[in-house]
Image 1 (cartoon, rainbow, N blue to C red):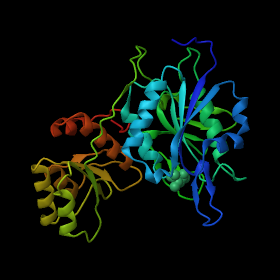
Image 2 (tube, rainbow, N blue to C red; image 1 turned 45 degrees about the horizontal axis):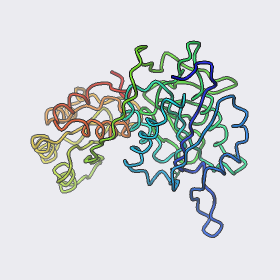
Image 3 (cartoon, rainbow, N blue to C red; image 1 turned 30 degrees about the vertical axis):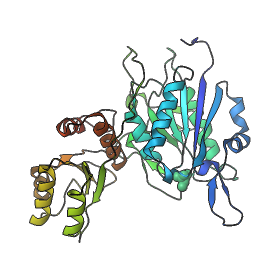
Length: 348
Ligand code: ASP
């Protein structure tokens, strides 16, 4: 048990990403560099009253190389260091940050401490970098406690461009400007102006009866994503929906969960569902939700055995399936839990 009067301790876990990248003088392209460079560029970190330690993944990676084994490593590291630290910061590339934050939100059960993902659009060594401000505010958020010494944001979240978002509600929306992330279906958890304003009504707090952190590291990745589009061929639909080694298919549909009503397509969807695959309907729209009762085209999917993803993001849908399928071998159990709000990922 830690002494409540002790200053906060933060662990920065550096996985890679633009924040720590340097330009290769020969090719001009960016590749990951080591963490010492980040510390050199942000001397302000020493001014914090919090104790800050770091852990570097070797080698640091571009987050497009992220894999489930790295999520497992992050979850295990957090579990190992959980008692020693009050908050965790994951420095991560932006490309797959929303996937990793979504995944960790499911892997870390009974979380009562902040796990804040951040990174940057410009390397930390550049004059106009957004990395410095992102990292400093993330440290402040991860250290923040209320008068009862409890974490103000005990969630897996993303801090980027002055805003704190719930991790499993976030998506990368811009590849070139500083406001790279958005959380279209859920309010922001905090915004950093002169002060950091926490929107406590939107933050999830665990029950006062603290339960120990439990991690789930068995992930079943047998998921395919089928983006519905005009002109999709029967062969493509068949290959994905009836493909071997695929346990679940995320159907990325139009609007409120619609797809074409052609009999050949609905026959394949029905066959896929009847042979036991889990089919999850997620909208291609950035905001809003799936409602398969609104249009007959949506209703036809529901009747063919497709489950609603409600207002889940594509990233969280994938993570929720990896997590649930890793935990349960019974597909009906997985389907019933897809309907439930497990980590604040859907508005239900
Ligand atoms: N490709 C980089 C990455 O995801 C982009 C970034 O960090 O912004 O690692």
